Image (tube, rainbow, N blue to C red; front, side, top):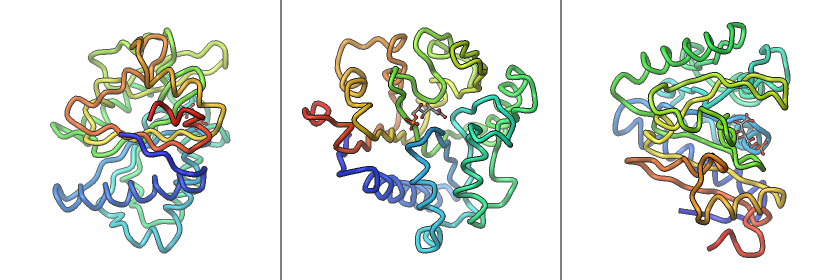
Length: 240
Ligand code: 6PG
């Protein structure tokens, strides 16, 4: 399902509403809610909005478990670190118990950080699955840290792996398709004219996840939703 909203502000409003309703539904049905967050610039406004008292008060933070779909392997003091961004704009302002914010430990080697995070997620989830996953779309078609032509796109077993991005001289740790596709709900947030052409390609055939990793996201028993602004939807409305 795709929803096209006016602009980046409307996108943050919509994404916030989706977050609140998913948390409420999951906690009502199962007593808790496990969310995987994305990094990048697009969701920042959503996270900041969730921290506003009138929105934050709609969420039972004691029931929420906040995890990450990927991380850049840089120290938490580095502005590119996603956990740092989420703490700065969201979790330092809301009553989320510290032990319910699950950080990818970038002080370890990337391989160890991936193993550590896999253990963390397996301990948290057991036989359960994530309730909600927020994802972004890169202009090369990547999502989370699943990059075109890189092995994590094809991963079938591990939940979390490390991958080197030579072009950025950076390692990433990413949750893999088996866990992302197990989620009850996956929501892509896409904003800006710069994304319109890749968005068209991702939504249309041919399906070639190796070139356009966002195409690998197909929840096996869950809902896939796109919230995109008009600039990203482009003149064709993203094929609507
Ligand atoms: C990260 C991501 C990545 C991101 C896309 C889109 O970089 O942290 O997880 O997959 O969501 O690159 O990023 P923007 O929202 O900045 O366009």
